[in-house]
Image (tube, rainbow, N blue to C red; front, side, top):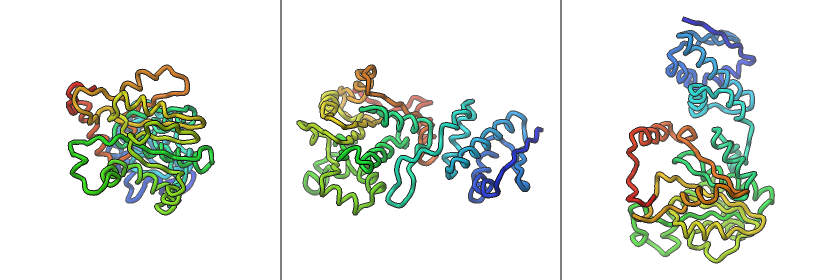
Length: 324
């Protein structure tokens, strides 16, 4: 049995560290089978020596985030534990303090994992950025945040968001309404992200002015997109021909972000994914960077990460009928 003490500078740090109903500390205690007790300005951690050492590293990492003004959540705690378990706790210093933009409700949007931070840095540095990874890693949301930040800074004049209208087992023809009504459900995640960043009224104002455009990928053909921040979402469902068409729309003073998950391809059997081709073909071109996310970058419900890991571990991924 080992006992170790951590000194805490301010009582509000201890309150934030423990979380609502001590939920943060309970996660650490359950993960490492240790006991954590707060007495005044001291935290006392006791248990198996190896587990105490890991718990101390997690708590010190969380205090580092608090000192940078970060609000702790279950996601922060679990992510710090995963880094400590992998022996990468020193990399936590790289997190915190990076605000991309402020949402319409006054909430700061920040990268929450090292993968997300690398992604945002790549978008800042490169003309074309490709983000590939599982659901819930913030690929689309962070890209929209970066686009809104660039628009607010007047670095670009337009935000263009697009995705291929590929059915995932359902047919467009069965949806009610005209063509726009039929494709709107495919574009809903892009609308949601923009509403969150700008608010519905501001979004509508910019749409009417032509500063924001959300449209299916087919609408991009034949255009040259200057002074624009262009996001292609669900790019795993593009064909190689569609991907080439999209990439060659790039105009002057523009950025492109391409996002997708190569484990969720909905293309017909025998059709290659344009996203996989693009990552391979463009990897050595200056100004283009690919960022690969992992299950550790998932910032949704913890079960999303567990589901992704379960599929990875057993190799029980959806059959692609040779399309990859």
